[in-house]
Length: 464
Ligand SMILES: *[C@@H]1O[C@H](CO)[C@@H](O)[C@H](O)[C@H]1NC(C)=O
Ligand SMILES: *[C@@H]1O[C@H](CO)[C@@H](O)[C@H](O)[C@H]1NC(C)=O
Ligand SMILES: *[C@@H]1O[C@H](CO)[C@@H](O)[C@H](O)[C@H]1NC(C)=O
Ligand SMILES: *[C@@H]1O[C@H](CO)[C@@H](O)[C@H](O)[C@H]1NC(C)=O
Ligand SMILES: *[C@@H]1O[C@H](CO)[C@@H](O)[C@H](O)[C@H]1NC(C)=O
Ligand SMILES: *[C@@H]1O[C@H](CO)[C@@H](O)[C@H](O)[C@H]1NC(C)=O
Image: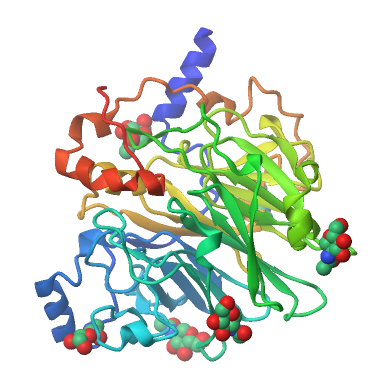
């Protein structure tokens, strides 16, 4: 490696943040919930029904004046896995209210199993333009422990104006596999009306998309080679911890509808740096979805170390945002002004080794604000979170602020970036990190993680 490049790498690994276009809206050391009474909280703490150290936020959505956050049941002690708080909350660390209510989350209550609105463990959710909240529940509790399937994987759709459940759709067993893990979804409302809506569910664990039709109240499973992970791109390095995940299709970003009312679904596997696309016209026809190999296309590659879990496209501007887990960063791509997809057309929105460690979800709300949730998930899974440090953050900016001055800015007028001096390229090296997971993963944690093979979450215990 040239000395100059080496210097850049060193700067990159050590530099806390080249750009900080996102401002911190909320942050937590540990999560707390809106308990019915102080006594209820004391009781939950005493019985282990609430273990603050087990509650880690993953997915977010912002609709109206409310912020929704999922808190999957990674382990026992998560009292509510779908929560909400007001965007104008007076605290920077608001308590989370169970959504739609406590009863839907109280798995120990006798009537819980009969409640249509029961929620077990959703990872991500999406509010649509018709005022519906789509929640994708994996149904699996104690994911890192005994992994109990408390309910079938299901799509729950709520009316955001009344907070009533509109529909519960359990994904048919024959569309899932033992390794299935429904981590993300995109919701596609046709310009022709709210009845004509499809949801695309990413099955990261068995490399499939489940397409759900709201009008038909039915779903079908779509597979494609492009949903697989890349064998050479499954290594992650976050906060000094190194681990290997085989995670398949994860990021789903929908373009604006074209004049035939179809969109482009941009997608990528987590363990991959390539982006692909397919027209929703193909996915919506269950015959064509399985017989159209060549209708799925490679868009391009973001470059080394740009593995991304969630992504989202702002329909108005055509700008996509990516969570960059290996870079402690958020990046962008402007599909209209820079349709050619390669490292030089990917812009760096924000990067910070403290506030952007494991960006886990990204959304753009109806008012054009980007929202990012970061949660240091790698530390939670492989070592531990420090309860005295700020671990979880929600950051925000307008789309315009987020891309200001980057290659994604529609008004960008700087020099055409070259690979050598591209802001991301300087961070592509960084091979010198210590494998802390190796040294510190206790045998018990390693054992607890073993069943996770099927869930595609597995830490290797090799030496640093
Ligand atoms: C982040 O970068 C700063 C600046 O180089 C460095 O001092 C610090 O140790 C890094 N922090 C973490 C958590 O890696
Ligand atoms: C938040 O906004 C709602 C209505 O928009 C208002 O009733 C409430 O008082 C506000 N809360 C705070 C803490 O500002
Ligand atoms: C959950 O249900 C149990 C049993 O009915 C009850 O004792 C407990 O108070 C409930 N918890 C909450 C937070 O509502
Ligand atoms: C949708 O289908 C499921 C079973 O596939 C059924 O249980 C449910 O009642 C249906 N919902 C509606 C609104 O038709
Ligand atoms: C699905 O595609 C097939 C094959 O192209 C076509 O024959 C059929 O009419 C389509 N179905 C619908 C509902 O559009
Ligand atoms: C973009 O950045 C420039 C200079 O840094 C600043 O003057 C301008 O106000 C910013 N625009 C937006 C929309 O943030």
